[in-house]
Image (cartoon, rainbow, N blue to C red):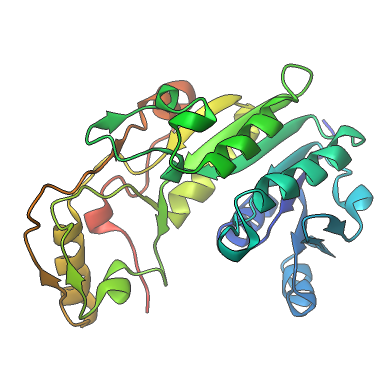
Length: 274
């Protein structure tokens, strides 16, 4: 069997370790970065690196980058000043290039921020339309990607809050006031994000899936442990006048479809490093 090539569009905090893992298990990996300085780092790791910016139009050699079997799109949706239409426009331009490519499997890394706070367990079917979503720009990008099915394989992975290693929860709340301590977290360790994406690629799994750790401890439990472990100032927890709405993301569909076993199933026991 000839060596499969994966193109990772966005070799950042998640894309870089994923590329390294795929190289280890025998894939050829292409990767993009917006930074010219980072090209050398990627190449030192064995990644065939390209500089690419999506402004939202692509600036860079997309033809060479997309000469691959699988394309994984992992670019942060920069809304804010750029507006809600910017990210879907980035994806639209990218998909235009993908139409002309040899790519057979397209994976779009989305986010569980698509779900509104429904104060219950939420599943993939809870958001299928723009008007159901708390992040319609992301859903629009998902829908643009899904237009490639069934002619090509398409996977949408809605990742929870990515944590682990240098992303330490206590760091972000040290000394602050928190009124949402009773809310459950929907975290995903970097190692499991890499493991899940590797599984999706190797199994050629298609469809829309949530990716979060199966356990959902409260924010207060997470912040107390994180601050104690790393010496951050504990936030002040206050009880709000009204219950804070929440969502608890189900990962059952992904586990059932893939058989994936989590390395870090409980966010209270994630591996971190200063």
